[in-house]
Each structure stands twice: as C-alpha cells, then as structure tokens.
Image (cartoon, rainbow, N blue to C red):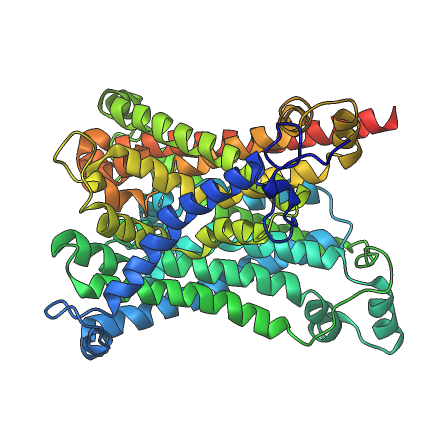
Length: 583
C-alpha cells in the first residue's frame, strides 16, 4: 500500500504534522478566551490607560509632559483635596477599627449569647450604599440633628459629628467597618490556641495578652480589611457629593470633567492619583505582611479558647455591643424615618408620618427603576456568562495566558468608578452610535457595560467557587461516553454550577443597581438615569428628601434581598452537592 499523500482526503494535513507546541490546535475555548481578552482590554484597560495617558499630555501641544502634575500640586485646592482624601481614608480606617474590633473580639473570645445575631447585624451596613444613608445621618448626628438637639437640651453642648470632613468619616466608617469585622473575625477564629495558652502559662493576661499575642496573630485579617476600607473611602464619590464636601479628590475629578469638560487635564491627573493610590494601598498591605509568619500548628488553628463572662463583664459587654449596633444601624433607622416623615427639621423626630413620600417616589421614579432593571440585568447576565467562561478556562484548561484573564477581570476592583466613567467618556466620545451622529458616550448601553465591568469580579469569584466544587471526573466520564467538550460543559458543568452562577447573577444585579460613581459620569439625560442617580437628584433639595429616602429604602431592599438570595443559593447548592456526594 502506497503512502498517503498530503493531498489525499484521508491523509494527515500539513497542519496536523506540525508540533502542537509550535501551532496549537485552536478550539472553541481558545476563541472564547480571545474574545473575552479583547472585551476586557477594550472596556477596562484601554479606558484606564487613556485616562493615564491624557494625564501626562500637554493640552496645547499634545506632547508628553509632567507639567499637569506640577500645576496640580501648585494649586491650593488640589493640594487640600489630596490631603483631605488621605486624611478621611486614614481616619475612616481608625474609626472602623474602633467599631469592628470590640464586636469581633467579644463574639469570638467569649461564650456570648446571640453572637451569631450580633455578627449578622454587624454586616447589615454593607447592604446600604454609603451615599444613601448620608442625608439620614445628617438628620440624626448633624448640628440640628436628633443627637445634638437632645445633648443641647440636657447638657448644653453641640458636637460637630457631621461638619465637613467629620461627616464623611463618620458615614464611611459606619458603612465600611464590616470589611474589617469579617476579616478580623475569621483570623481570630483561626488563631493557634496553643500559642495563647503558652503565653498564659508565662503570665500574660488581659490587655497585655491581646496586645502582644492575639492581635498580632490576627494581623493578616485586619490588614486585609483595613486596606479595603482605605481604598473604598479614598475612591468614593457619592458620599462627599451628598454631604456637599467637594474638597476631596473624587468630587474634584467629577466636578472638573462635568463642569469644564473632558479636555480638562486636571480631571485626568486626579484620576491617575486615585488609581495610583488604590494600587499603592494593596501593595502596602502586602508589604506589611511580607516576611512574617502567621501560620498555625494545628489544623484550623483551634481558635481562641472561649471563656464565660462574669455578671459585671457580661453587662459591660452587652452595653458596648448595644451601643455599637445602634450606631451602625442609625443610617437605616434614619432613612426609614425620613421616608415616612412629613417634615423633619430642627426636631429630634419627624413632626408626623405619611405614605405620600412613597407615592411621590413611585410617580417620579418609574423610569429610574425601569432603567435600573434593564442596566443591572444586562450587566449581571454578561457577568455570569463571562465569569463562567473565565473560571472554566482558568481551572480546566492549559490555554496560554489563561491566568491573565483572571487578573484582568479582577483588576476592576482597583479602578475607582469615577475613573472608569471618565475613561469611557474619553474613549467613546469620539465614536458615534451606529446609524446616528450621536457620540457613543451618551448611549445608555455604555452605562450597562460600565456596570458589567465594575461588578465582574463579584460574579467571577462566585462562578470560580462553584466550578471548584464540580468534580473533573464527571466531565471525563461524559467525554469517555462520546460527549463533545461543548456538550459536556452545557449539559454537565453548567447545571452543576447553577447555584454559584445564580448567586453571582444576584450579587452583580443587586450591587450594580446602586452604583453611582461610574453612572453619574455617563448619564447624559434624566430619561436614561438609573436608580442611584435618581436618589442623588432627589436628595439635592429638602423638599425631595422624603421621596429620595423612599427610593433609598427600595435600593436597600434590593441589595438586602439580593444578598440574602445569593447566600441562600450558595448554601442550598453546597447541601445539594454534599448530599449527592454522600450517595
């Protein structure tokens, strides 16, 4: 039998003869990876690098220059804004620590009735976007708010809780302290008990034991939480705007671009600084932990040895916990009261209560709510599709550069919303909407895409966790029976990932629904505005605050319900898989 020619239909082609390492076979997964990479580069990397590039660009000559940064630091308003942002972020970490540390220590160190409920209540502030509760907190802690009116009546004193930067620090500390609480509580539970016992045997007790042994061992969790708080506060736009504090970096970036235009270099310089500080904060937290050993000897560490509280200690502990919980739940209490208030001004409580605010809110917010459902829905669907694809490519394939997809998608966490919004304005302003002469930056689709990029890391983590729980043996069994890779993914993998995918969808949808920093830059007309922008508009006037608070309550319910459903889906999925594996 003669050798088959390369031109024969049944013989191997020249392409088949090439080594796979030189010319790897292109599959559907390769194509998906390429499409996702192009999408992330186009919707995240290019807009951010465009912002960075323009920051170094001379607006007159088009040459690269450092003069924009020289002008920035020569301007007293910008220098003040820079230091104010740093100061507010640092002090928010301090006050968030003061709030989180007692809750974390008491609920993990002592046999404390209701510790699970206390921890759960401590997480509630995260379901309220900070800008939503800012106005409500003014009514409680402001110069003429509930607390100061009562203190002035009883003691003749008035404390400026909400004056200027103090207000931003208080709001941000109360909103973001759960990041420290979650991470610190986890670290305390994983501490090696033998180390604590060894220190006690050597005579270390009380605060000395906590200061020298317990807290240093819990440092990784604390630093992780503190870094998140610093970044979130440094980048936040909505809270300073609603509290009329404009001498901070994020508000200045927004005001420069919105008032002067996208050609103003200072908006880009500020955006560059915001991105640089986000990255710097993550690097600094890594640097603090580098070279130090926090490992445990026992599996899981054993956790701190719990002890019972004496009667006096128990009363003091409950008093501290009750005070902290009242403080951190005050935005929710204030927002609820304001949403039902007829008039609330110069009085500890509203003059009366009514449902009219909800009627006004509904009559004037139907478009906001409809837009939000559309934008957040599109963003969430795209997030879980892309998140599932990235998770599968990273975990199940050996495609070159696959980990870069994970890094690219996660990088959105380090990009402030206002920076992404400015980048989109710059990139899409010169591109027209198909079949029209309007710039793409004014198209509502761009808002949905911005929300998708901002929330992609949340969906990606949920999808990755879900895929890690799916046994590879199930895929191999399906393929051994003749199923194609695409059929296996569609009929085996995705159904088994359904719990995590749904959790990612709900999380993305709920958090995208209250995103303000990016969307406020991209809303070109009120008819295209989402719910978060609607709250911002309502809160601009005293007469609209009741309806704005009602819309804020709707936002909190959306996020809270989404968070609850997400956790419920994850837990049910875990139970289903554990039951299935046991059989």
